[in-house]
Length: 474
Image 1 (tube, helix red, strand yellow):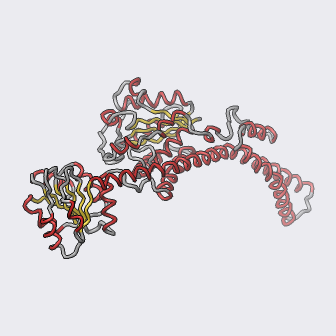
Image 2 (cartoon, helix red, strand yellow):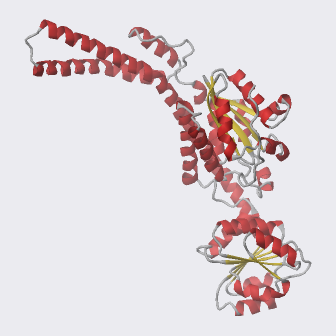
Image 3 (cartoon, one colour):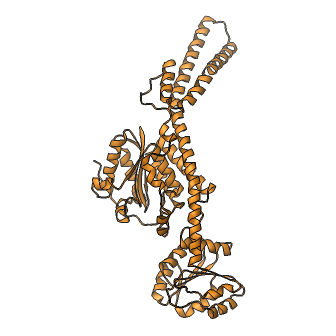
C-alpha cells in the first residue's frame, strides 16, 4: 500500500496544455468515482485549478497505479500517453505529503504564499468525501494538510507581503485609510495595470469606481468589468474632487495631473485626503504635488521597492515553512506507525478478555456458592490484573513501532502473544518520512522568486474551466 500523487502544473506545462485537463466542479465527483473503481486504487482526490491538475491516491502497487492514472488523464485531455507522461511530476509516500504541504502553504504556487489554493484543496477534498472516495489514510493526510495550511497563514507572514505592483498599491492605500469600505476610486487611463489594481481594490471593499479615459469606449469597457462609472476626459477635474484614491496610468508624454489641476481639486475636497498612485512611465503626475497637504503620491519606483521587500520577506518566511513541513512529515510518520499497532492491541485485548471470561466461568462452576456481589468483585479484580499485565507491553510496542525496524518488533510482538500474523512487508514507522524529501520533490524547493515576480499578475483561482466529458475507462 502506498500514497502516490501526479501533478500537471504551471511549471511542467503551458496553459494551452493545462486547459485541456481542467475539470469543472460539477464533473470532479464523477471523475473521482470512476478512478476509485479502478482495480488497485483504494482512495483518490482530484484537485483542478487554472494552474494545476493533480491526483492524490492511496494505491495497492505504485507503478501500475501511476500508469493507470496517467492513462486516464491522457483520455481526459485527449493527449498521447507518452507526451503527457513527460509533463507530469510523480510523487510517492513521503514525497506525496511533502508536495501536498507545499501546495496548501503556497510554497508551490506561481506567487509564493498565495492563500486561495488552501480553499481549493479543501473543496477538492470535500467533493471526494461526498463521493466516498477517501478512507482513513487519505482523510488523515488531507485533514493534516488543511490544518497545516491554516497554521502557515496564521503563524507566518508568507502571504502578507506585497509581491506585485497592483497588490503593493492596495497595501499603500491601506496605510493611508483605515478601511477601503465606502471609498471612491478614480482610474485615469484604462491599461492592464489599472485593471489589476482595481481587482485588488474591489476585493478590499471599495464602494465606487470611476474610470476616465481620452477614449470613452475604453473607459466604458474597464468600468463595466467592475460595475463602475465611465466618464469623458472633460470631467477629470470634478472626478478628482470626488475620489479618495486615484490610479493614473495613461501613457501620456506630459503630466496629466498638474500642480494647478490638483491645487484646485484639493481646495474643493474640504480637507479630505487624496491618495494618488502613479503607475505610468513616463509619470502622469507632477512630482512637486507630493508636498501638498492632504495629498499622498506614490510612483512606480515606490511600488517596486515594496514588491522587492515583499519577495524578500516571503522568501525569509518560506524557510520557516520548510521547517514546519519537516515537523509535519515526522508527525505523520508517527501516526502511520501507531495505526499498525492498533489492530494488534485490539486483538490482544479481545484475547485477554476472552481468557478472563473463561476463568470467571470456571470459577462459577467450582465455587457455586458465590453470590452475585462476590462474583462482581472477582470480575473487577481479574480485569484489573489483565489491564496491569498488558499496560507495559502495550506502551512498549507503541514506542518500538516508531523506531527503525519497527515492523520486526510488531511481528515479534504478534508471535509472543500468538496474534494474527503480520505481512512480512509491515514496515513500522516509514523511515522515508523521517529523512529529507526524496529527489522527486526537489524541483518544488527551487521555486524562482524572479519567475514569480514576472507572473505575479496571474493567480491560482479565477480562470474559467473548459467543460470536458469524462473519458471511458479502459
